[in-house]
Image (tube, rainbow, N blue to C red; front, side, top):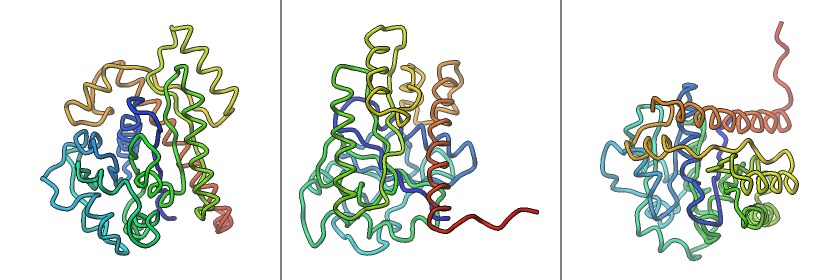
Length: 270
């Protein structure tokens, strides 16, 4: 079964989109899965959090500029997280890829990633917090989308815009793409405002909304140290890690169901 390709997106900055990307990578590593993280955000937070082993000479900016089939594999670099986690790094020059260029510009990443799903168990695309060509490229390369939001006044509006962006990509040709989860991040359930906004999200999006990821200083501490959340020893880190494990389980379940839909059930076990 090909590795699921998951676009992690938000159309509002500062909601912890990269936190979710890195949390999923950490949870997958705990299960012994090989993961490729593709950093499409010019800010490069995922690149920094993965503590790359070497300075990359070929980045996502170069991959999108090149656009040849399978060229992304030439940009893969090792990370400080260990042999199971690889990355394609971002750089500031990636900002120049945020406008359409070349033939069929929204499918440049899809073409470039050809063959990567055979080498990894999970591919994560960390999108920038906007709906430009970088995010659109991710949505055309992915088969699953995770929308990250916060339990604030603009949560429903921002999540709705992201869901609509996924629907546009489906209508324009990526018919297998669907939203697997809407993830409320940085939740403080003791606050009545957060509880109200979480209920509001669930009222609009139903079961697509996951359990909220709690606000934990351990998450920022682990990212600052360049280590997976599962390697950070604290009670707060453990509660956050469990939330990411649950989210990874949802990704895996959806991937398995889609595989059965396309290929039928496997042979009966006797």
